[in-house]
Length: 635
Image (cartoon, rainbow, N blue to C red; front, top):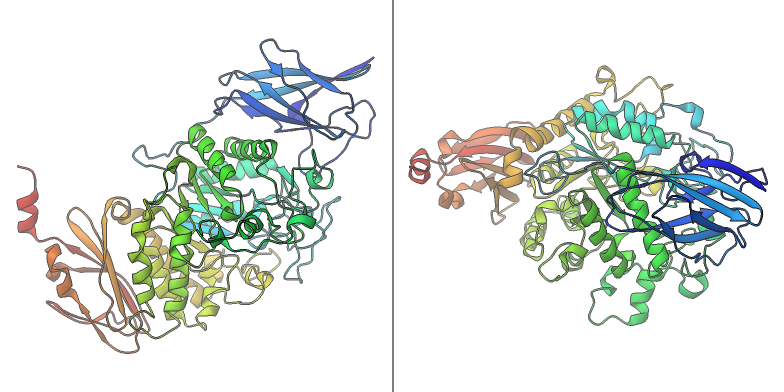
């Protein structure tokens, strides 16, 4: 009889490596360890082995029981561990097959508290936050030694827009101070887990190991350390998770636990991408099924989340990443493409285990009502089954189209007005994640024909509008490429140490980079620091748009923030008399921020007659009249 001991944490993560020795029965367990107080007294364990036929597992630690194996493959054992949810310590597992025995130490660690730092905050992210979106492969290459890694199918090719360029976790860590100096409070990185695909693996959305960091980005320890450093600097880390699909080179697809872990391509084919089929009362069942169960692309097999084992695998994986790296939020890729019952179960479990961790789903949809279906809304009876928020493509489209056309009744910035007028559909519109472009959309500066006034105006409106604004890396350098995904995800200046010019070095920035970074920093400072209370507790209003002007504001306890944009080519009047009901002392209005072609600011401001410069954006703080404050103050 052969007998040996291995610690569960010693199992390899990342690129799947099967052991060469014949003694090892199990070379990996998912999850690799666990945490207490995870909201359930059952833990699903997936054991990997070269040949586990007729193998069995028992718990040597008293008080714990393992259920029967449910795997149909000899490469796995899939069993439920019954445990005390408050237990922490080491469980000893015995894996046996005939005369072979393997002892495994499986660690259950204490769960960290991921509650918001601000005890008055509802979630870890709030409306006074500002988020920075990074595509790690294109942000900063600080460790050229991991650009090419043995066992990975795709070699680096920095000249190919769709190839791997070499950005890594060390580069993100080195860039934390750069991000913080621009006033951001949160970072969303596109997926860092392993994507061992033969091509276009750089983007991270075709996972091949749910528990492993791609070694070309770095290690799991580096990711955990980087997340800790970000927290220490006051930056909240958001993880990007994909539940809908994997990469076609994922071991669980190439060698499945069971035949029903994935929807078969021959049956479902490619999704129709029609999100509206899910809430559409007139949709055909076949169209709805193809939307949820069709493959996103041919290289991304669609997971069958109606299989309870698949659902638990994905939910446990989510909880593990949060506990392991102590993350502040989750962005869910292709949220509506996952099955609704699974999403509800996920959201219920997450809110029970980590009630303060902010979760938002990607909802790329053209209609406000369809987008609202996936957020907490006035129609839903199961609010716990919803994410806290979704990505607000409607504000994105309104700003993209609105500043690329002349103002009219329903065009120009009137689009923003009508989009926000539909906020009654949401229960918490202030938590919607807003943006003007992202890693899937043409660069906004390119969409605006490289007219800097439009880019600055859109950033101003985005920052001041309700929601949590998210800016794509490189916006501050006026990246402007349009067309393919590879092009819009270009390397940031300073990506490579071998390049002399770097946006990370303030002394080496070009004039337009200094201008944009200063503008973004000013907007973020106003939102996240100097006037944060307005964004978290103020009451919003918007004025009816007139002749090229969109204006709105936030009412605080003693003053109002008013912001306005004039997208026309001529001087226009802001009908300030509309605000009479707010009882403002207009004579004491203070200009906080402004941008425009000449930065001349307000051309004329006499009483109720305010005229705004063409192509200008402005933010004022206006106090409430003192006599009104005296009347309303407590005796």
